[in-house]
Length: 117
Length: 107
Image (cartoon, rainbow over the protein chains, first blue to last red):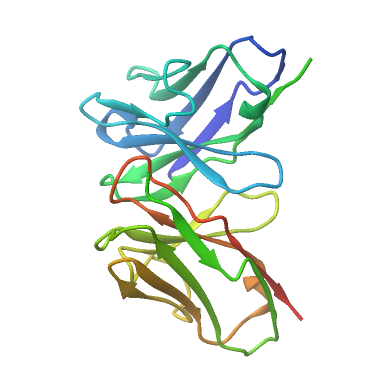
C-alpha cells in the first residue's frame, strides 16, 4: 500500500523554525515529484513547494527564501525546513506525490503547524 | 500566477440531483486541470485529472469537461457521501494554484 506520513508539526513562536518530515512507503521518494501543500484553518489549499525526481526544487513566492524542501533517499523521506515562521504560515501541511508533474494522487494525512506567541 | 475562480462557493442539492461546479482560469491552462474532493478533517483526494480523466476508484457519476480556461465538474446523480468541498487546480504553470473551493451540502 502506498502511504505518506507527515510529522513534525508543532506550536512555534513567530520567527522560529520547524522541520517537517514525510515518510513514504510503497513509493520511492527520489523517483517521484514530491510536493508540500498547506491549508490554513478554514481556508483553501495552497501549493508550497515541489522537489522533482532529478532534484530541482520550486517554491511559492510566499515561502521563497524561508522554506527549503529536501529529501533523504536512504530514509525514503521528504522534508520541509521552515525558518522565519510567521503567523500566516499557520496551517495543516500535507505532503503529496505529484504524478508526472501533473496531479496529486497520493496524500498524507497532514501535520499541523501553529505559529503564535 | 494563474488565478482559479470557482463558482458557486457553496451549494445545496438533493440526493439524485445533477450538480455542476464551474472553474475558470485567468489564462489558458491547456489540459492541465484537476479536481479534488475534500471531506472535513481529511486530506484531499483527486477525482479527475487532465480535464476529464477519472482517477482509478472514483465513481463514474463524477465527470469533468471544458477546455482552455473554462471547466466543469459534474456529479450526475448526487449521493449522500458526496457532501464535501471540491477544488479545481491548474498544473500548467507553477505555482500550481487552486480554486477557493465549492462546499457541497446534501439537503
